Length: 142
Image 1 (cartoon, rainbow, N blue to C red):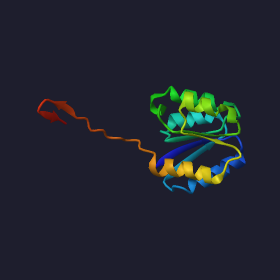
Image 2: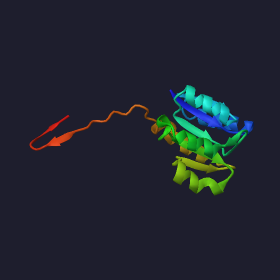
Image 3: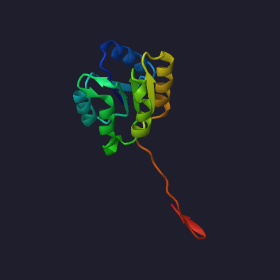
Image 4: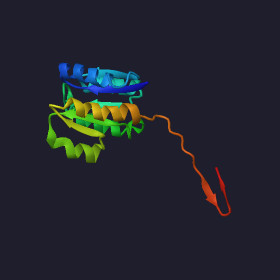
C-alpha cells in the first residue's frame, strides 16, 4: 500500500487532487490536511511514500516543511511534489529540496496524471535489495 500525504490549503483543490490521484492507483492511501501541524503528525505516525505540498498553508510555508522532511533520514529521498501558485520558488525547490516535480497552479489535469502515474505505478520502492560483489583476483565473493 502506497501512502501519500497531500498538504493543500484549499479544500476544493484538495478534494479534486485526491480524486485525480486516487483514480490512478487503487493501492494508494491518501492522507489529507491543510496545515503543517497535522502533516507533521502524519509523517511521524506513518511511513509516507510521497508528499504533495502546497507552498502557502494555514500555519506556515510548505517549503519549510519540505526542508524539515529532508533532515529526517527516512525522508531524505522520498518524492516531494509541489503544487503551488508561486512559480518563483520552483528553482529553489529543485536545487535545495530536490523535489520530484513542481506543478504551477492553475494546473493541467493531464500534467498531474502524468506525474502521479509514474510515481504511483513505477516510482515507489520502499524495500530495495542490493547485491554487492567484491571482486578479488581470480574470483569473486557474493
